[in-house]
Length: 258
Image (cartoon, rainbow, N blue to C red; front, side, top):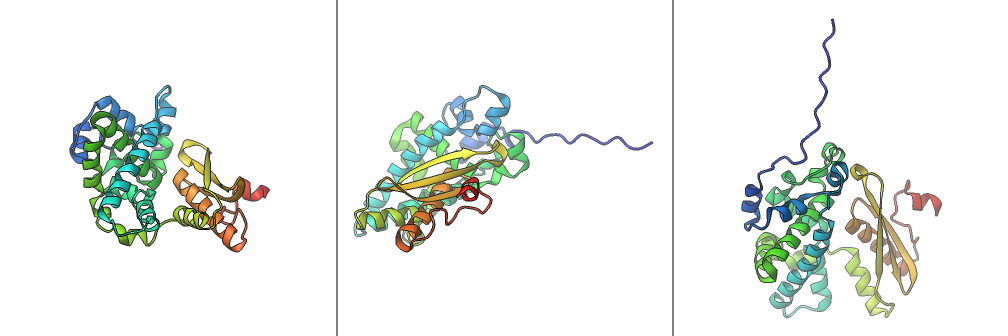
């Protein structure tokens, strides 16, 4: 008689559900319900049903973070030009940097993820880690205001703020495209991004217009990444005459229909 196969249990929504541990790592506390909201990924909210996700907090945190980093760089580097400061800010608030902040604090252990995201490595995905870091910043701001949030953000970003000049030298193409358009009087690049696919295999396609003309498209696993790829395509399209879809994956719906 053969052995009965044991059904593989789904991983828990979070590796660590002790909120006190997270408050200790974040070095400040706030309303536990707001913390749960900051940790709620859309994949978990979809599975449970009728739950708000952390996306609105992420939106707020992104803006608060930009203000804090901009002011820090403005005050710390009075000798540097706007272009240099923009590159430095872009590198510090990038998905890659914020994901590393999350890893340093082990935020991935606390994120509430759906089964699909859990099984496909979502807990260590840059886009998800970046989003939860921004959501935590948004929640901190709502509870404690700007000055306290500034202290928390600067504390967690200290390793990157200390090398801001070096990071600025490898800034992304969004800053490069913006600077080129400003110098050439082409107008401000305008980005849009849409999400596609199931929660465990989500991807985004972004477009960038300059002067009402489509100049680039990009695809990535996050909005920020897709916009960066769109900016890269847009920059090379404007300066070298390449395709609007230069950096779209070959199997992308847009690339296939181009």
